[in-house]
Length: 125
Image 1 (spheres, rainbow, N blue to C red):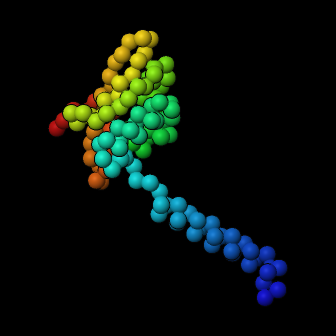
Image 2: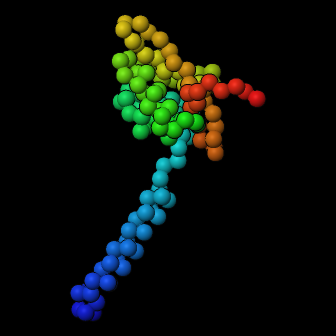
Image 3: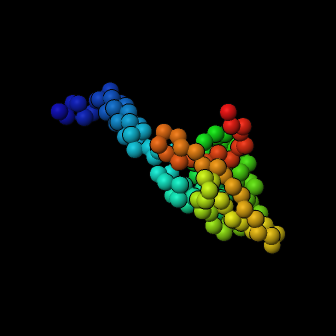
């Protein structure tokens, strides 16, 4: 037993197996993209825009990925996000920019049983 504990190959093997196990556990518990309900989605989108964090917004998008998340968050850099609600099939983000109140609508879609927003205007077909 003492010989095994001082063997470098043994520790390399233990490290490799431990690393693979950790990767599998992280993948298994990786959060699903989107929200469980439209209201939860509205809260998550609002929080991401308030924090100006495109990393939080990206998994909530139906299309576009990182580039669309960055440009959407940049739109709100100088704005104060007041609230976001689910209304009429869209997440409606209410914000103030230069003293003017406005709304930004993000249509909601269902993907794999989860609710996500689509910030891009796409033709229906």
